[in-house]
Length: 266
Image (cartoon, rainbow, N blue to C red):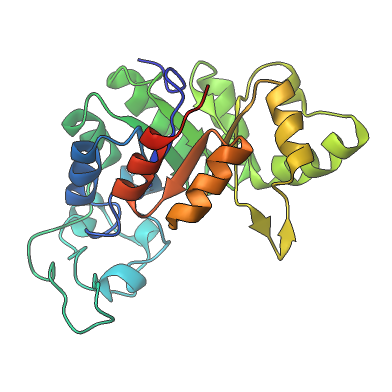
């Protein structure tokens, strides 16, 4: 299995997070059942050095618990109600509260979904997180079915150095540099040397459109794979695919799957 073969078109943002609590096993299971190309997720390092699936640095938004991920062991985290605050009707009902949905380990996700490709965001600027990810990927023989990203340049640099065969995307620092370089005819070393093939960006950043026709052409000329996050409207998905975007991250897994299947990428 290879992360970019075939090119991922539909990427489920935190699993099927529209219908299930984000970054949980039911959300992943639903996305896999729908047939999306990739499940996107996020990981942190626990107090006992396990890699747990979770987006925020605390439990507050999702479960109502103010504790920080880094201060808790894996066992403590896996006792948390990850469905406590999930609602689709503005808080009138909480259908997954108390239903036994808990955070789970990334290694368990690889084992439970052995045919699934994962796009993984390293949420902490801790080199040890990179080393633990390397250990997990090698243990599960999953080096080639994941793409690793991070806003944190240092941890991503460490990861590339210790597991160069695994695909990575650009850090926030690299993206900022790239937005300057491509306009003046330059390039990043990691792209020029073929170490990075994925450009994962929003269409706009700080009110400025960064996904311009010129940038799309620049990426295509270099055989880079453009993936955009996070898009949840059908018309927007169709417009982006028509403009030449390769893949879309979405909270609406079923919709992005359908739009991708309806699109002619030839």
